[in-house]
Amino acid sequence: MVRARTSKINRAATAPHHDLEYYCRDLNGWPRSWMGLEKDLPPGEQLLTLFRPFLESLATSDLSPKTIQKHVDNTWALGGELIRDLHNDSSLRKKPVDRLLSQMIEYGGPLLYHGGEDQQRSFDSTCRKLRRFLAETAR
Image (cartoon, rainbow, N blue to C red):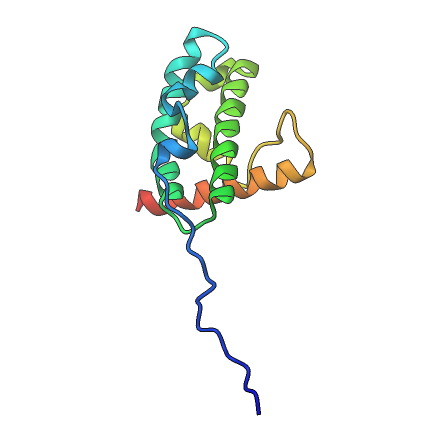
């Protein structure tokens, strides 16, 4: 009688952890990449200050590197959308950036200027994740 051998190999591979720089090359350059005018730089820098703890938490999370990269890319796109809104409505420049961001992601994310349905769904998912993160860290 031949018995089948059972494997005791644990197939659950852990995702490699990378530092933030792995996912966000030139993170400090994001505000310049969003700006259209020099006056866009201060709100862009404020956004980066708000985004950085979220991005750091993503980089150290158990999410797959591909998922983390999607959230990072969507966060960068969110910054661009907020700066675009400042161009479209100059009265928004009088409001604090953190309040603008909160309003923008209150119910998901804004409608992407460029992008299809799948991109919008992914973007909205990131915006909801960011909203939850900001709410938890504000406590």
